[in-house]
Image 1 (tube, helix red, strand yellow):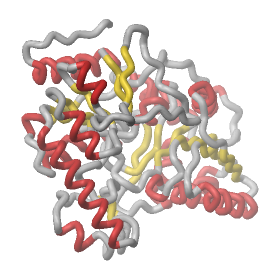
Image 2: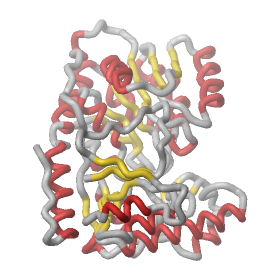
Image 3: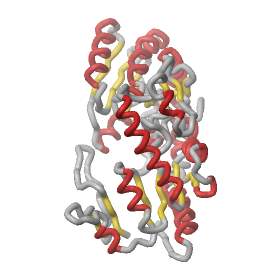
Image 4: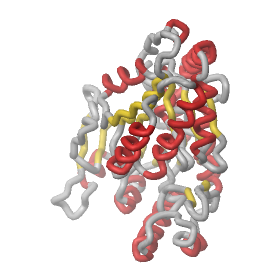
Length: 376
């Protein structure tokens, strides 16, 4: 096995740690053939994740039978968001094609520059052609599998391989043992961008505080372009209502995320776009933390309403609907304890063994006589 990457950059979120014995192959930027080193390695199978350059992706998957993991809406949407924002926010179920150019600006599907729109359209059409050409496309949710098929990828080559939650389940505090009237502790983990819906979560906070008549503390862990505006809104909300406390904690390391989850009563996933899956929900469930989310995209595949958390209606993406779901989750100690136990049971189903078995079946089908296995 070898690991090929298009970038050597190590970000604040850390580097990828390779197991011993795995060869690392980089782009040969000084050669006319950037893939010279990978081509010389002669792979029997290519397992591709998230190559941002569509030309590079096309050339990499042409080297051998290839499996692409489709994490997001690349190749199915001009903006990759699958969301119309005008006149209201709603998911788009249209297959990528020329008609998308006609509605992109009027329906607020992305930015407002028509030249950028055309450039992105060409990029996404190139990605779609690559998806249609590879031996297999793996998705993490039935929702994304449907998206692939709707956009013309042969259903025989689309495979759902459920993701996994890593690490041992962590102990959690019994909600019934907490002091009556103690603050409700909510957590958001993720990017601070428009479609992540954190503005909806902030607007829901006063509604939650009034409904449960207790202080509500929210930790927003993450970063992004909307952070300054969200901090301004949060400060104004807290100044008006002494029951609210909102903290912006920035990006968190793995250990810090575990600490945040250990203190949380519920994770809130307020995304207003159709999340392809929502892995953060599994991470929370593994810590015994129920989730509250709009029922968008692949989220209902891991969040069972009233069992491992609470779903809010997704049609309008209203803060009031999100607030009602939060209240339903944390309204009393018995309910919260039941949902925490349900979240833990849910997480137990998403194992690495199931994930690897699914990949093995796909690899065996694609590679044919090539024997590919894994260590348990």
